[in-house]
Length: 257
Image (cartoon, rainbow, N blue to C red; front, side, top):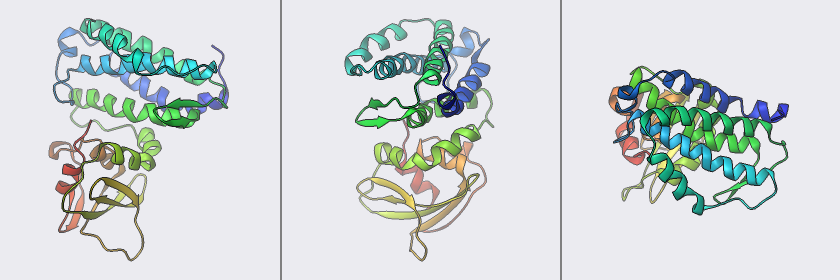
């Protein structure tokens, strides 16, 4: 496929995530692929199966959008999942790398003006890259940390995804019958935020002179993993907190996916 420079630039973080995952899993044998990942009840191979089936499904959707055709819906999910579930662990590895690379190349080749309607949102190329990366980067970490307990989410993915975590919180956060608000300060990149846990969970910029039930300061990479349910005590870097509500309360608000 020909490459459109602006789409290739927009897709650079997704290419970096693909290359990181490929470096992690190329050469893993069946025993290693059947070893646990960070995901509950999922082996490393099953994470690869999940990402591979996603790559196929999203490729169908992006291809349809690029051709100006209706984007397929839930009817395509089941057959793809069944086919991937039937694969052997080594096939999960090899077919994930193939499907993921093919989808990446399609995204890189998109006309920069194409619009991709998915699940009620109309994305441009950069928006679609963030959508895909939100799953790809954290599941890559699920594999990486199983192989190296000190692994972190890639810095370029953190920088791109940090300001979109409000949508993740709204979708996956767990509310509380007793509302509370925690100020969260991050580094690399720096943000000053407030997490509100009530009927649902929201993340918004903190306001000067506002009052909170607690305060937490931590790296942005750790905050991303917190919101995606991946900041257990054994994988938490140095942080500080004060007030009546803190990191333990936020962990309960973000059970993960």
